[in-house]
Image 1 (tube, helix red, strand yellow):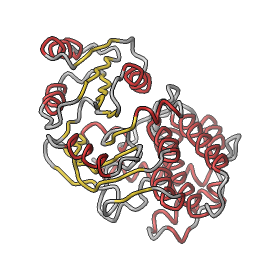
Image 2 (cartoon, rainbow, N blue to C red):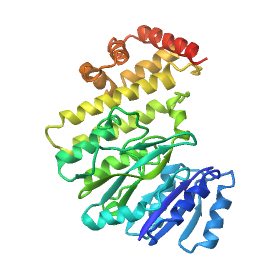
Image 3 (cartoon, rainbow, N blue to C red):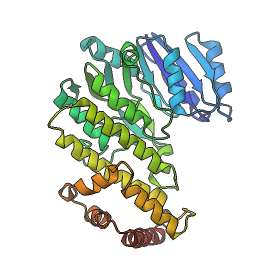
Image 4 (cartoon, rainbow, N blue to C red):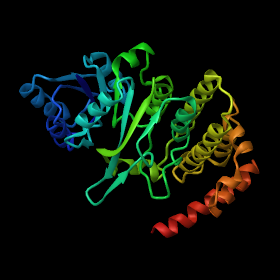
Amino acid sequence: MISIIVPIYNQSKYIDQCMKSIMSQNYKDIEVILIDDGSTDGSGNKCKQYVENNSNISYYFQENSGVSVARNVGMAKAKGDWIAFIDPDDYICDNMMTRMVECHLEYKDADIIACACYAFNDNEKHINPFFEKNKIFNSYEEKKELLKQLFNSRYAQGKEKKYTAIGVPWGKLYRKKFLDAIVLRFNKNLRRMQDNVFNMKAFWHASYVVYINEPLYMYRIDNISKYHKHNFNNYLMDNYLYVQAERRSFIESINNTAIDDVMNELYLGSYYEIIDILVSYVFNSLNPDNKNGKRRAFYKTIYDKNGFYDDTINNINLKSYRSFKDRIIINVLKSRSFELNYLFWNTRNFIKGIVDK
């Protein structure tokens, strides 16, 4: 049996489409666990309607505690051999569970089975593969490919625009005994990237991971724009540094040699994190801090107490970037000068503000 966990917070607009796709699955040996994370928009009432008419659907309400807690509660309630996560604003193709089970029957020892997705909204729909073809990740060398994309979402994603990467929890089947054996749950202290940390550990400890290059999951991209418009987020730095600590600790724990290529992807991914912090927090036009406050935040970022981003700036490989813009940004960062960065990012914000008008 597959236990499908749906964490819900104020998604009344999309729940019906999500639930109908689950109930339309060709594979019927499923239970559906709806975890309402304190919704206030009527989502709970919609969930209860499905529970009344379907014996394999259960509903649980919790005070708003975040998606990690909701997923963890669902995992504790799950009775199936496999666990799948679906976000309530997304939906799945009718044959998704059938194809995933078929894959399990072919690769009986796999602990994780993953698929590609469609990225969509009301106006567009794009296939978003994570790798170019079907792949089995078994040996350390093979699993390094997964780590590289977890650390740098652009890795192996091709030149076409991609909306997400392999680190998401949805579009996968996880063997429940495997997750319980390694006592793996989502980190409730992370507001972002908790799924990336979860999968870093899951991928590594799995007997092996199977990826089928078929888009079986429908990933709604309307709601990701808030991350790409660089709204003001003062929690980003602490969140990213926590993730960095988890990643560095993990790399030390696996105690393997020849990880230079993995570290290079970590540096590349970390570079984009630094940019996100500077654009969405330190030099964001909505940041209420004065110049001295921004100076403190800037140096706290590039000289964080664990040295993660200082290490990144020291080791970032300019040859990895063909973009003239990235080369300029990296050189500005390498200067370690607040005044130069302050001038650069404020000039950029000014020009971008004119262009966006």
